[in-house]
Amino acid sequence: MDLSVTSTELTTDAAVSTSASAATGAAVFIPTPGTPYQEDIARYWDREARPVNLRLGDVDGLYHHHYGIGDIDRTALGDADDSTYGKKLIAELHRLESAQAELLLDHLGPIERDNTLVDAGCGRGGSMVMAHQRFGCEVEGVTLSAKQASFANRRAHELGIEDHVHAHVCDMLGTPFETGQIAASWNNESSMYVDLHDLFAEHARILAPGGRYVTITGCWNPRYGQPSKWVSQINAHFECNIHSRREYLRAMADNRLVPQAVVDLTAATLPYWGLRATSPLVTGIEEAFINSYKDGSFQYLLIAADRV
Ligand SMILES: C[S@@+](CC[C@H](N)C(=O)[O-])C[C@H]1O[C@@H](n2cnc3c(N)ncnc32)[C@H](O)[C@@H]1O
Ligand SMILES: CC(C)=CCC/C(C)=C/COP(=O)(O)OP(=O)(O)O
Ligand SMILES: [Mg+2]
Image (cartoon, rainbow, N blue to C red; front, side, top):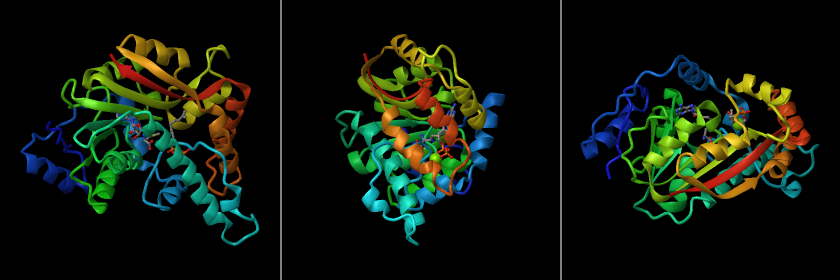
């Protein structure tokens, strides 16, 4: 299957993406203009350069835009008075973010080397690299941000995996991938930027029958009633629109995606937030996450679904 699409918007790494395309003779994919909202989101991620993301990514070259899960390794952190503590804190936060991506990949099911995976809203590509390193397969990512796609393609090139891992500037609601050819696809903290019915219709279209879809997301809890002030604060901070848990399940059911696992990761992500709140890399959004997770208005969920 030839999925070597690329974007005319890619800048510094256009050569990387174009040569992959030229090698297979694939047509160049020209994205359609986005909505004004999508243009805002593209600008947001083009400009994003928060140290909490770049310094963590520098630890091992996997750049994430998602949060962490798991217990803190206090032994690895050592003494807060130690001169190396700051560096260890960054490494520990990064370890927890990579653990989150590993958990998502655990839920993709058996993946073969000749399979193709799709990362919808791929950011700087950390999860794509991890997926290729684990399964040896092709990984195609889409993001609205030309800067992020360029960054991800540059990293793939540096790692020598540019023939297998590609980022495209593209709306995840209308991807160039052929119908029914994708073994598994995911959204890692990227579904709060789109309408869920439109999103799951597109995943259901590209996934092979029996294919697997996984999301890790923050969602508001219908048991709380409505989005809390903390959830509204997170929406304003990231210019996103957090959905409720019920919306996820309904939109999946409407689009031939049948949940096989729904895992509440709220308790598992709180240690990450507690540690991050003590770090010099705080961004100011830590309190909203901690308070909303603790008051039950917000949940951190993994949902894995089969395309039937
Ligand atoms: C919080 S980041 C998550 C990045 C990545 N999944 C990760 O785990 O590191 C959100 C991403 O969603 C992307 N995004 C938002 N709306 C999108 C859309 N309509 N189509 C494609 N990507 C989109 C943004 O460009 C950004 O890369
Ligand atoms: C769980 C929810 C609601 C996520 C919203 C999407 C989002 C912005 C994720 C993290 O990105 P980032 O890694 O760039 O953010 P930060 O700079 O805060 O680390
Ligand atoms: Mg981050």
